[in-house]
Length: 486
Image 1 (cartoon, rainbow, N blue to C red):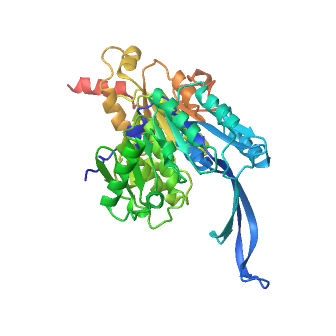
Image 2: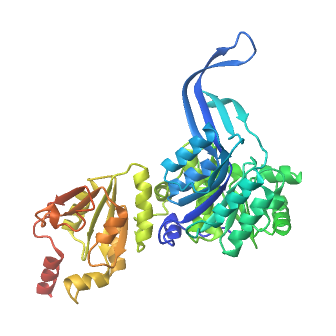
Image 3: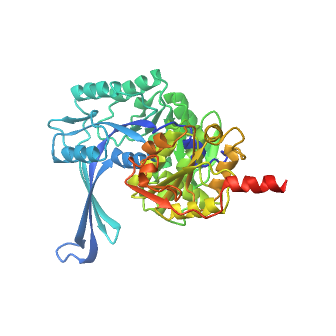
């Protein structure tokens, strides 16, 4: 059974120039958690009494997928229908606050926005109360939603259908969305629910869990052979190209023209709560970045392990890079030549509240002065991004005999330094456009500058710091010593 070759998350995501655009269609609802402690048994009935100390309200259903796509840095557009009620208005406000376009988020008068209330004691679920109607959205709502999907102002890179069986993804609407996407060669991924899977005909990837399929076909799927037969039936019956079965702690199995087994990533025994939406979101994100399905499945598997360590919280690209470093598979900082990619990473870092430091230079014949300067720059924040002049840029700045060291080698050496988090190669004579896209919090330059106004990009960054240089240390001096010794 083939297994996917091991690729780091940066190798996959650097293929996209900018933020991948994803259309997420499905059911949105309100998740309401009541959290407290269970102190005693009720004297009036044989049940627990929970003293509630805290409440949490969030957008649930497809909203879980949205948050995880957002954490990965995707540009997400949501297509759904909610009730014209307090719950629906809360969902619209929440998504607007996240910067998510709501032109395809419609309200339907008379419809009740689903609400799921969980009662937890000592972080353990005691009961859940569902207030929902699984009635299909009205035909006029479905028509308006389809028009909103077709009228997206920019082409999307992937369509994710997150079905919670709450009536938004009706059979007719689902088929029309899939047909629209296929005509534009946009991959469609489906997280299925309910018993009518015929509506998913023509999708690119189906991502069910083992229990859902076993319940649908009324067959025990306790072996690889049984899974293979079920996948073949879904592929032929629904015309889907791939089926990815998630098997909880046993990992996942991908079926296409062949079968690929992916062992579960290490979770240190933590709960896999929230792993399903993490896998779905990460898989879709990677496909939107032009990854292969095998690469997407491998990284989705790792993201599930990261989310387990965060109690179901969203995994970020930074988390995945750290995870791969812990596995010993990434020894250096990521090196990028795509401004769009580093812009995407910067956006994620800002969401996490990280202080981004930027500096730039040629870094030809790296010496102690360079290293001390970079260490001091890294101390100014949480993440250091180094802009590296390309070979062509260095020649224009320094003359035809420079650089001494090729840009790929200069980038590799910088990336190996523990103080450097990201390296991005740029072609321009100045890093102004790169700084504009990254929007760092701190900009550092060497102490040979006497005023912040002399630093390129000072008008874009609130905090410019001039760092003292080590006297007698420069590439020009190093070249001179070598020439004199020759």
